[in-house]
Amino acid sequence: MTASTLKVRVARKEVEAADICTFELVRADGGALPPFSAGSHIDVSLPNRITRQYSLCNDPAESHRYLIGVLKDPSSRGGSKAIHELVKVGDVVEISTPKNHFPLAHEAKRSLLLAGGIGVTPILCMAERLATVGADFEMHYCTRSRDRTAFLDRIQRSSFVRRVQFHFDECSDDQRLDIAVLLAEPNAGTHLYVCGPKGFMDAVLSNARRQGWEESHLHYEFFAAEPVKSDADGSFEVMLSSSGKVVVVPKDKTVVEALAAAGTNVEISCELGVCGTCLTRVLEGEPDHRDLYLSPEERAANDQFLPCCSRAKSARLVLDL
Ligand code: FES
Image (cartoon, rainbow, N blue to C red; front, side, top):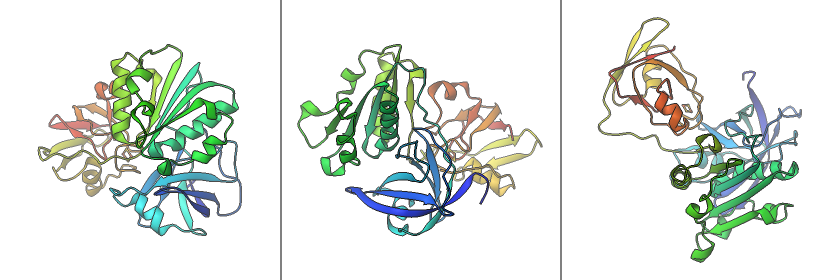
């Protein structure tokens, strides 16, 4: 365990909706947990030795527990299946202290919160925070059906229920979310937050960009993705600027894997290009960005990349390592 990790005990595990469980985590030594802000996540080390990120969805004012909600994804690479099937009440697991890559923008005059499926976890926390401070916001929550809608009761009993619109795929077309209409009038004071499946987020973000929303007003967090691999992937070299050492990255290995084999470890967590832990500065060469973490501007600058999934378009990258 390090200074940034904690042992927590699973105090409660409940079925929240079809295929979705919540896990209430309390400090194993009984103390208070480190504070967090809306949009934060924790890294959870799972019994099958992989680490996954889960957004905190309880009230940030609470210090006695963290609450996470997890969808059992049939296409899971082991994360959601492991936590659903292997983690039980009473188990002690290691987590990181909270990190926030998806914070609320304090300068926003109005917030538009869009959640797709289990992407509701950080969005709900944001809605509760905005309601607590009396901020202006509107939330849209899209799910396949009512029985797959996590936190339905909690939202319906909340003080801000009138600010929330539910959109169920199973219902009539007229209550489905019309993204183009919703985003039709970008406003200088309005910030957009979106979390959900990749297809949903791509649709929202591409629509917003097309309709002229400022990039700095778009806030998003991808929570799962399969790294893009291609048969056309080739090998390339990375050079470590500190030592001049050159490492060949074969076509079937990631930069992180190739560096580890050569004795250089980069800190990693998700290994899916979503958490930002492995972010590394690029001093020369052109990365082939495969992550879902960097914004379009950050990608275009080509001065940093995520070596757990991204590759190179140039024959060599010089890295600030
Ligand atoms: Fe999460 Fe690379 S380890 S983005």
